[in-house]
Length: 162
Ligand code: RP5
Image 1 (cartoon, rainbow, N blue to C red):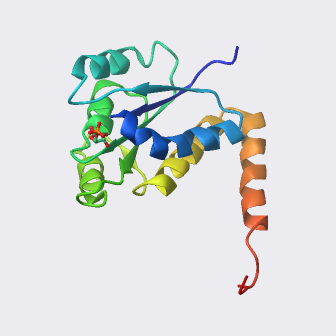
Image 2 (cartoon, rainbow, N blue to C red; image 1 turned 120 degrees about the horizontal axis):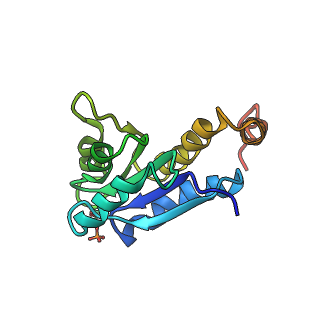
Image 3 (cartoon, rainbow, N blue to C red; image 1 turned 135 degrees about the vertical axis):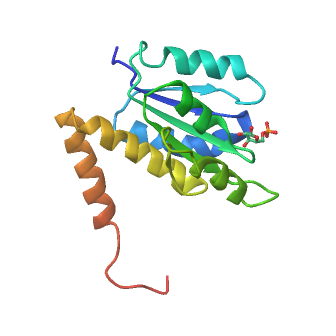
């Protein structure tokens, strides 16, 4: 079985419809991953354990999505040197600006690579994770190049009324 190098974690089951976008991109690129619900506030011990064991378990990238007072990506970055990609989940009350600000403004020393709010951010997190792994994986690099070329080829040169 292929080694799992990407962890997709989220603060709640309600984040999954967004975070699924990251999973789908990784599926398309043939990158294995694990998924876990790890809440900074509701399951802090689970967060600590996940961060403490991430390096030893062979994770190379952690994609962390959360909404509202979105402390999960930053707290995970404080617990492991595995790069953390943060996804601000869109919220009803503040449209995800709360999530974005909670994730992006990390203090010096503990970075989180913060994506856009919502589904596009989650998909881009998957692509970012694949790009990081592709540095040392020529086969994946080829698949990622093909994926990008296919996306470019799908864009029409002119708009249509259809
Ligand atoms: C955060 O609170 C989660 O990441 C989620 O985006 C938000 C709401 O969670 P639920 O009340 O839907 O479980 O911790």
